[in-house]
Amino acid sequence: MKILVLGAGATGGYFGGRMAAAGADVSFLVRPSRAERLRSGPLKIESPMGDVAVSATAVTAEAIEPNYDIVVLSCKAYDLDAAIADITPAIGSDTRILPLLNGIAHLDRLDAAFATKRVLGGLCQIAATLLADGTIRHLNQTHLLVFGPRQPDQEAVCAGLAEAIAHAAFDKRHSEVILLEMWEKWVLLAALAAATCLMRASIGDIVAAPHGAAIIREILAECVEVATAAGFAPREAALTNIRGLLTEPGSTFTASMLRDVEAGNRVEADHILGDLIARAGASNVFTPRLHTAYCHLKAYENRRQREGG
Image (cartoon, rainbow, N blue to C red; front, top):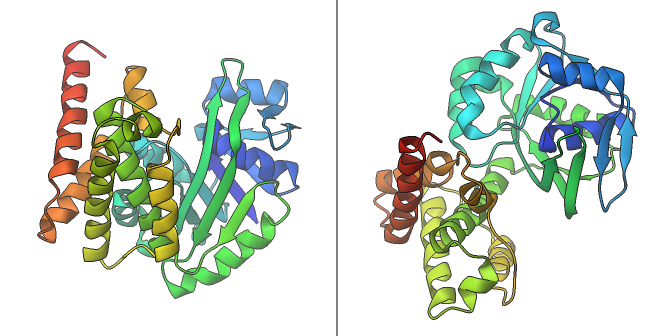
């Protein structure tokens, strides 16, 4: 199975690098400068779960051919249009796309660009960063990749992918309920982003504040109600885990979106919170806490743009 990973950054480079180290046929679609670096030395991963230095096959846009079985997409939501343009030349008659973006809205955009039959369901859980020298630094012990079919005729390619990456040194799961799992992750992420960005603080700091835990529970309840109205009510085991993560005393857990805000970077406010609010409105679900958090983030974006960020 031939796998193409768009980019060799923190997420795509991590999972793709570990796939390559396990012997999978992986190439990275990268800019010329990154290609030159990968051709002159190994792709390096520093991780509590074991370091990796692997020779990586780098291809650039002008040399891409439509002969891949899987294209892995792990860009930010605001880069999706550019990513679609980048991978289009790589899409052959039997190519399937595995998006690892947060939320759900990207599925509609990818379906429109490539047809639903080509777009699998997927998600990942990892905290990693790309260092100035191109090394990927994994920040904790979580490194999970989940994928699965959105329609029955995608089952065979998902089974093939599971076999191709079986020996890769990260946690993986071939899911039969991938859309539900994507919604469960979205519920966690939206509640985490809304709470920690609104309060500009970690979960532990919020829980220690007056009414902090209650506000987090109210935000989570709104997210769960939207998911339930959409037909993807989170399973009780998932909810128990989410509640624990979002109300743990002393926790330093924050959304990556908060780290982006604090660094003055672009954020996925529309994709994570805006889309959830839009779906709430379509289902007549009242989400005042989410509205407040979304307004906060959009005000941040407006200020950032005004100041030339």
